[in-house]
Amino acid sequence: MLITQLKTIDEIRTLAGSKTVIISCEGCKEVHFPECEATELYKELSDNGTALKVIRTEYICSPENLDVATRKHIDKINAADTVLVFACGVGVQSASAQFASKPVLAACDTIPLPGYQGVTPLEVDCDQCGECYLNGTGGICPIASCSKSLVNGQCGGCKDGKCEVDKDMECAWERIYKRLEKLELLENMKYPAKLRNFAPEA
Amino acid sequence: MRISELFARGEFVLTAEVGPPKGFHLDHLLHEAEEFLQDVHAINVTDCQSSVMRVSSLATCKALKDKGLNSIFQLTCRDRNRIALQSDLLAAAYFGIDNMLALTGDHTVMGDTKQAKPVFDLDSVSLLHCVKTLESGFDIAGNELDGDPPKFAKGAVVSPCSDSVDVQLAKMERKIEAGAEYFQTQAVYDSEKFIKFMDKAKQFNVPVQLGVIIPKNAGMANFMNNNIAGVSIPAWVIEELKADKEKTKAGITGVEITARVIKECRDYCQGVHIMALGWESKVPALLTQAGLR
Image (cartoon, rainbow over all chains, first blue to last red; front, side):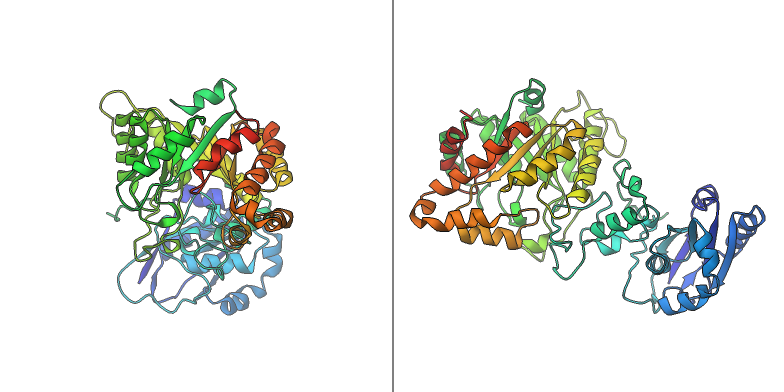
């Protein structure tokens, strides 16, 4: 099991920008999703004109499902400045890979619960760290995709874009930098030192 | 003495690196440091370099200090969490060691104890932030330190010849923001690449020491090219090492190549950092040939 929990309402309002398409992933039996709170927010963002479209679907962790669910709304997605994803970290990463030229942001943090983890695909991973970093990293997870789970940028072990630990593994921070460069969001790289919080959830 | 004060005075700062042994007998290391490294301003002590278990950097720094030599305490985030890192920094302060260099550290799988847990609770950036926090009189959890806080010259590293140089520059900026006061670079063999890098890095207005490794032979150069991130040795350097094997074996070619790189880059940086990797005995000749003493 895992739990997705909404980031603060104020943070989500900021993330939504001025024109957003919301992708809401619901129905996965392995995920607890805060449906009521999310629905209220969708209404607020639709009523004030921020949300161009709310796509309610399920299993966006699968690129095929995501493609089917979003294909008919692609004009709206192209017109949006942001794609705001209400899903676990895997869903956000699937969406950021699908819409690589668009800022894809996470509205939820993902935290683990013991037990069956479901049938999410292996191409992307979510460590359920509870403090989702995807919004600063172009939708590529530094926790799950970096051998050292570094949150402050590339280490000195990257050679030809590959990780020192495994020459077949791409350096996550190289990918993050390139994605942010493409999104013209390199300013995202300038933030004060981040420290992870390993305290168990109360 | 804090090397940040030397940079502030506009001195061209020379440092050299020593690697502690696998064992606790430091006599050889101390003898070499006293014999060959008297002319550098400070001696870096590596922290289980390449993830190979060795006696600690801190103990070695203290031993050097006892011999009257100024040391730089290298600290990686691979083996200690934030509690242990802060604790060791306070221990360094107690010993009067006031230079530190923050590194993320190689992954444990690169070394001789692959089964070890890679920690990486902090990284180079958050470690620098942590040192700055200690200097303000508080630990990273926000608790007040007893007595006067420690004060370090805070160093960091950067790879000018990395194939990801823009990503490295972005990280360099983060390190400065977190408190880095000087940089030592990964080994440089291609002056042109270094000068191009410095053209971009000079905007940060933080002193940078050119990093050099005296190449021992063509095999070592090829190995570094293939395996060491951030190192790129041009073909002409490898040809030079191949040309006269006896001369190369004696270290003469390696010193010539390194001295040339230093001379070519000198006007673009604020110091030199020599990683002798066992060839400490060549350091005096290198300094002479490079016109640094």
